Image 1: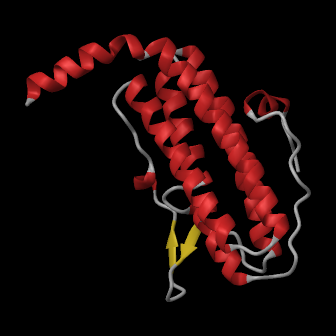
Image 2 (image 1 turned 120 degrees about the vertical axis):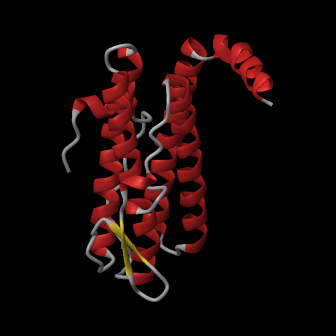
Length: 188
C-alpha cells in the first residue's frame, strides 16, 4: 500500500495494523461497505473534503491545505477498507448492499456542500463523529480481531481529525459566534 509522506502529517502518529481477516465473511463485508461507500463513509469524506478544499483554497489557504491533507488520510482508509472487503470475499464497489441484496451505489447527494468556512468545518466535524459512531457499532458486531484492530486505528485518525478541525474553528470561527447567534435570534 502506498503511503504518501503527506498522509503522515494528518494521521494519528501510530502504525497501521497488518491488513488481514480470520476468514471470508460476506456479512462483515456488507457492514464495511457502509464505511467504505455509504452515506457516512470514507468515500463521502474524501469527496466532501476535496470539495471544501477547492472552495476555500483562495481565501483560507491554511484550512484548504488541512482539508486536502485529511482527505489523503481518508483515501488511505478507503484503500484499507477496500482491501479488507475484498479479503472477506466481496468486490469493493462504491455501494452498499441492502438487506435484500440490492446494490445502492454511492451518490454525490451524500456530500454536505455548505455555505462558508465555519459551516463547512462544523459539518466536517459532525461527519467525523458520525463515522466514529458507525465504526464503533461495527466493532461490536464484527467478531474478527484483525478487523476490530483496523477499525480502532481508523478511529484514532478520525479523532485526530476532529482535533485538527477544532483548531481551525478556534482560529476562524469562535469570534463569529456572537454574530451568528444574534443573526439567528433576529430571524425568529
